[in-house]
Image (cartoon, helix red, strand yellow):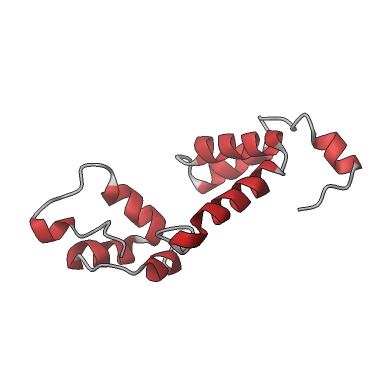
Amino acid sequence: MVRTVVRSQWGLVPLWGMSVRLPERVGMSKAKELSFTARRLSSTEAAGIGLVDHCVPDAELDGFVAELAARIAANSPGSNRIYKALYANTRSMDRAAALRAEAEMTFGFPDDAAARLAGGARG
């Protein structure tokens, strides 16, 4: 069971950013429902509403994490660096400003872009 939002049963309120992060993750309507009802979710339901990214049985967790890490590591480190910077920098921008920031390519191209394009790298 996911026990992220049951604190209202005890008269507690979020002090760690949940009132901001939960609606960002699952939408305002679902965040209100979960907060006001203190309903517990199964891991499958939490994955279904976007509260968690993946739902994996305990016995498969290590393999899943290793595969995910390998898939990330197989890609361009430079591209990953640029994506991380774009996500961090555009998070607080409105949509138009974020689109402009991406289009301006202020981060340049990764060092390995030419070699990967010439080699026909596939995902």
